[in-house]
Image (cartoon, rainbow, N blue to C red):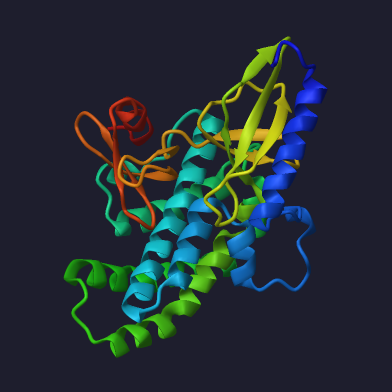
Length: 310
């Protein structure tokens, strides 16, 4: 088909098919033209990166407060992981080196992720020169950073208690925990919100590079729907074939490999986004939220070791 049709024709066909799919999914309105007055919940569900939006939707869909509380804590974990992954990748791209203090991410607890998230944020704020996440850093004033850190410090021991002991309280107790601490989840959503202005994508099949130009279909991993629309991208950059952040303002890309990987899950047999979980001696363990299905990757361990300096 590529040999018979010119690129503009292919682009038009892709755009037409994706417009139909967006209407079917209820996502026909462009993200930049979202109606005014959206609540934070609606904004997260429609416009946040898929791993965050999907966890948020899962939390909302639960019927019991014990499950809602568990999903809220998983959402907290995904938020600080996602910010950490983006900052790790941005600092690596900027200076071709990883900041000190991330060796704990070899087999990390949530406490390690909390420390890494705010440590990397401080390093990125202090870095000189251009950095991919400049707009995100500029949007975070000291007050919002302090509120985000305080919210994380509030949720961290509660997460450890719940995960460590399991469900041992009455349902009314979990309702009280959920309702009392939902404000901290909201604060962390506000903390990560400026990062949602960067589009999470996955380079699709058919990447071509000719005369210094890369042309590829990109799966748009934004919003909570697990069916991803496709948009054609054209750039002079040589792009990675895994998960990328795309900055529409600068038309630049940031590779999030090996921290985020989109692949078919061996347990639920559908395409999901896996997040880095831990490093074993010969392989990396990735985890999908909110199912907590895992995947073992033998091909990523050396790269993770180079990032973490272990």
